[in-house]
Amino acid sequence: MVANHSFDALILGGGAAGLMCAIEAGKRGRRVAVLDHTDRLGKKILISGGGRCNFTNIHCRPENFLSANPHFAKSALARYTPADFIALVEKHRIPYHEKTLGQMFCDRSARDILEMLEHECREAGVSIFLNAKIHQVARTTEFVVRTNFRTAVSATELNEEAEFRAPALVVATGGLSIPKIGATSFGYDLARQFGIAIRNPWPGLVPLVFDAKDNSRFSDLTGLSAEVIASCDGQKFRERQISEDEIF
Image (cartoon, rainbow, N blue to C red; front, top):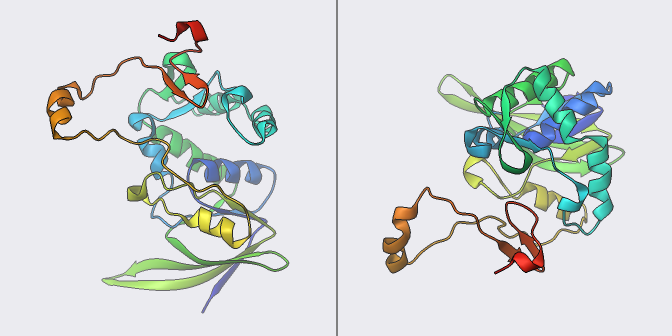
């Protein structure tokens, strides 16, 4: 038997973006459901910032973003600013501190941020569904999401089917950055299904791999950091904005 659920909005993905979207929609009186294929919310939140969650940057500006549509960042940041999120953190009395260049980190643990988001979801009446393996997304007069739920009964694993319906669907499933914590290509595949153009994904942050000779020379430097200048396509980045005559 297939269980049927109806909501005003369905959000696929229980990470930072999905939870924030659910909270704000719930505050506006929408009946919201968050579906995630893993067994817990916010796994990436817990490992961000070395486990302390770099939750915002007080100097975040539209000009810090490179995009084919530069006006998107202006609109998004005008509607919800870093100060708004800091106010939420302070509301929950989470201790935090500023590191270099406006980076805000938790004093204790990233778990504080996740617990804050979970609390806000409960307050906004958001329904959370974990272990939801989505096997079909369709659209007729509304969006239809069909899932299998894996539940354990004694020593037996059971699959239960469910169907979710809503006029609005938000895809917040993230990218392929960390497969070990559940990252998949689901969002890309769904975009292709609905004819949405995407750029071919490639790694944006990768480790350097040395050959045996260089490894023996540099391995003792593990854990050390140094100020560097990184440049690409005419853009230069350092611990602060730099001028051309500072490049050496």
